[in-house]
Amino acid sequence: MINFAGKFLRVLVLSAVLIVPFSAVADEADLLEKAATAYTRAGALDGNDAKEKLSEARQVLKELIETYPDSVSAKTLTEGGEVEVTDGNILSLDIIQQDLCAIDGFDCVIRMAIDESHKLEGDLNKVRGLVVVVELQEKAGQLDSAAETLEDIEGIVGAMPVGMSKLEALDYTAKAYALVGQKEALNRILDDATEIQGRMSDGIEQSAALNYIVSIQVEAGQLDEALSTSERISNSRFKLYALYSIEKGLVEAGRLSDAFSVVAQMPDDLEPLKYDALMRVVKAQAEAGQVAEAFSTAETISDDAVKSYVFTVIALAQAEAGGNDAADAAFSSAEKAAEAIPDGKDKSSMLVVIAKAQAEAGREDVADATFAAAAQSIDTIEYDGSRLSSLLELATAQSEAGRENAADATFAAAAVIARSFEDGDAKLLELSDLVIDLARAGREKAATEALAEAEKVAQGLPHADFKPYSELVAIAAAQAEKGQKEAVSTTSSSVIAIAKSIADDSTRNGILLDVAAVQAKAGLLGEALFTVQMMDIDEAKFHALSSIAETLLEQQQEVSPGE
Image (cartoon, rainbow, N blue to C red; front, side):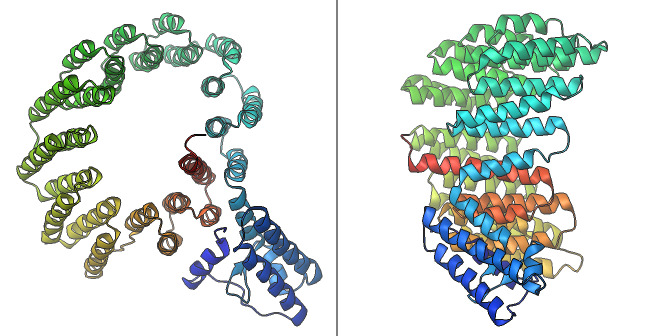
């Protein structure tokens, strides 16, 4: 059975959407009733049978427009509006189109995403959007469609004026071709990029252009050539970006000692990026059975938090490979590094990460001890707000690790702190955080109760304009995880009502994007697509559609994992 966008819209209508009431002359009323009957029957059918009835409903509405062009209903439908029909549904040509699209699923959503990508501002953004489409098509195994999208990309890039934006677009194009296995196209792209780079005279521009050349060379598997090109980059930031790309390529090629050497050459401008590269090398070493090398690499790290995390990565990789002794040794080193972290909040966060990993690796008793150590570290935190956020982090991790009783106790301790704030604004903020984390841990009932408490606090603050859209989205996501479609639909309508009251375009569209994502995960594709149509920022629409397409692919894989 299809998911009714019309039924969903009815809920929104009851929440204050203006519609054209059911009021028409007899013959016109007959047509509306006929459309409503076909639409209702479609909801009880699947596949082509449902599409046939939806198409019938659409045709009847078009007949009404042609026969009674001056009627209120006809004018409303022509202008893209909705009319209420006898069975309580809300109908429009757009609604029926969304329902038809919901039946076609991924293919229709991708077509919508392609259309939306062409509306994005600037050629570079169009290319970025279409590369995302290629990635989705490749995941779906639709290589012929991906080839057509690549032709679309080539047309846009070819018409772009020579400059840095075109270089970046060529880099994105190279990634798309590499993704679908057409590496023979990369030499041509590299020639085009090199020609543009040769026109750059400014030092910074030269460095930026050479960074793009390196990126394309890496995609083409020309790793040694990329290393040579990186030596010509004078700007330290762009050199770091180039070396980061090369290191990634070397790891993927299994050249781990070379990758480690490249990390050693990286400037310290962006330590997180350098540490991420180092972590990639360590993980690959551990997975390849190069345990001594992985431990040696990890010991070169001076930051205790990063070192602890890297040893945790080694431990998980070894546990998965059956190297139990090495895994235990790595977990021990991870805990040792974590205990050396001076800040109580940072220490507890790292211990929580280790405990989750230990539970995942089947070391239940050790994980319990590490969770307890995290709790002890939290007790040393003086500021209530920081202690509360750490407790929420711990409770969420305990829940994810299957320790529900411990999580309940930790959430209860967090709730006590949240309620203890005397300042109303602070209490409202902390209760909101509590709501979101309770929902994320699958405790939507407790989250709803905490939300009611937060709303009560907000009512006592005359200056507060409490619009709990983030909290409600988190609750809807929890409902979606449990397959509670009707609850998701109801909660979504509440969030959308809030979104409609927000004047800021970016905020409103961001909320609608989050709602559409949750609706898609709940299997409410018709509602998700209708929510997308409420957006009025093209970039938000595109991101929503690509997110929905990704969700549909994940759902297909869950149904048929062996295919």
